[in-house]
Length: 240
Image (cartoon, rainbow, N blue to C red):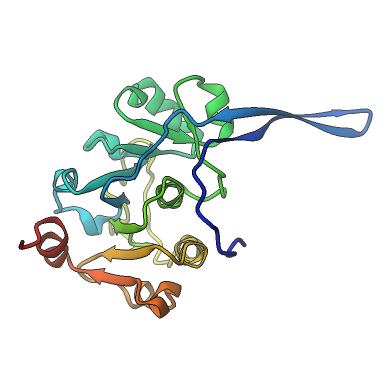
């Protein structure tokens, strides 16, 4: 998939296909231009919040004073980030019902933007990734260059073990596998190749080995793993 280096350009909007029409065997596309309404300005670090159990004991409110927060799906039940993402139609419908768009910028694919106009924002230059990946993708489109992943575990934990903080709640079924989410992990590595001018940081107390190997930004000395204590002490509350 995509891995070619991207030169940063300020996002102003884009044209996307909103309807496909097939007539007399010929396919035509109706397009619509979406101007950027968010006009995001990067401030501080970009904290990308996943919903993996590794962040369960961490107070997300600590992030607010030193950067901007990007989250996804049911995160809004407990914490309102600056930007939130959903790509699944069912949870997007619930978020619309709960008026999440009144509390922060809510990004989705074009299908949902059209369905719930004018409440939602288009994922910029959408790579078609999952919500969490769309979040770190968009942070870099916004211009952030120091990226922190929090609560990204990229795996199942086995039968009877929690994979997601919201597991077994609405829109989240049981998870009993023990798979590594290689596709999601590949998206994390792809974006490192596409944005080599960015620094990439993982916050995790006990990351599995596969999270710490084959990170393209390693070669540029732009990848680091922090324990939560290290993260709090050296990033959130550095000694002057």
